[in-house]
Length: 281
Length: 237
Ligand SMILES: Nc1ncnc2c1ncn2[C@@H]1O[C@H](COP(=O)(O)OP(=O)(O)OP(=O)(O)O)[C@@H](O)[C@H]1O
Ligand SMILES: [Mg+2]
Image (cartoon, rainbow over all chains, first blue to last red; front, side, top):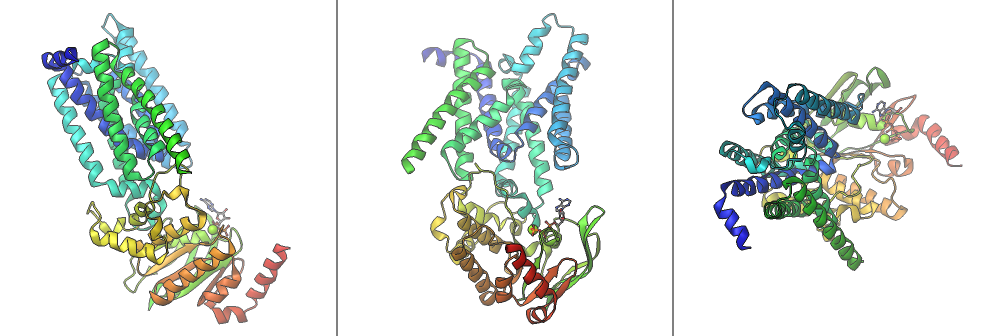
């Protein structure tokens, strides 16, 4: 405990990591419920690979701040993927798979050909699994992350009721005059933003975990949309905090530690769900 | 007063015409039953009325102060994921969503209205229950309460009693009939239950090889009904 307090007060990068980690965990869990329910989680997965490809391109071109390039590219891909997903004539999931695997491969290829770094596989590994990049955040990145997270949370609260209506029954919402296309677009853009942010935290391969685990865990125990949303937000924040602290104390990779905590907590919730469900009967 | 006017309407998907030259008028307070065989295009007509899809040809007009998004809707099948966490109250409230425009939250009045509609459907005791744990009949009522939140003028119901037992079916018909009589809500209902259709409705629209539109009495006097009734009896054997 003393060691923890010492680390926190001495090293600003640990504080940054905690702030950013908690915010990202919060944002991704808020939309996670909608994504899981709308069967959009595969889009999140695909987008994270796109973000990896974009990151590779940014590194090769030599853009100082990767996020300025990855963000727009990922947003555009999110919108495109959503379009193809809605068009029933093209197989939505096939398109997602194509784009995601394609950008993964191209990203690695580009990094391999053009990289000036001596430790290529280390670089790739850290982009995929996030290893230590969250501990090397610049002040600018921290502020960008804080600002974007606030935007995401505010948007989510403002549109909470609309998002529920569109998620629960899109046809009814459309028939009664809710602009469901607009909200789908909004959801897609916000996912893209979250994914690019979360890449710093857990790396592109593990983002889906951050989106899916809180929602699925909360759904084991709670039965209304509101309680599930609130529970998954708390779940995600607590797990992220625990994960980061553990990884700082024991020197484990941040991303996979957070996901490991998520998995443990999921089984806990699963057991609670079974126990509570059994008692209700 | 005419609320919905269809002139020479053709329905279908892409270039595939399913129904041609549909002409009918719905006045406020009418109880219109749409009957016809499976696949004759009843649900397609309803989706067109709700502007969920475009008509291929012809005119569809809303008048008498009815805006296209003021129609309540009970779909033939509501595809809700098995594990969707949603309380009954949340779902009924979501019927008010489009009326709120850009206002983000529901007011006290909205919640009171939702509760009132739940009372009408006799589901106020289910308020905090989880939707997916309800029986089919209870679920239908929840969706009907939601539809009532979306409108005070016209309700479109696509086979509202499919899958309900005879008792619940009759209850459902009575509920709908009361809405029509007491609240003067226009009802447009798709039904395969021709006897109940004839019992409650004021007008009939028959879609099929022959298209018929008229009052219940005119329908009973026409020869379409004979063919349809004997056909459906033949089909039951
Ligand atoms: N999305 C679609 N794309 C193309 N054709 C469709 C589509 N949906 C329905 N159809 C076709 O349109 C025709 C009418 O379908 P519709 O669902 O309107 O029938 P219905 O009268 O409601 O039948 P039921 O009594 O079984 O509900 C059918 O032949 C069907 O095959
Ligand atoms: Mg139908």
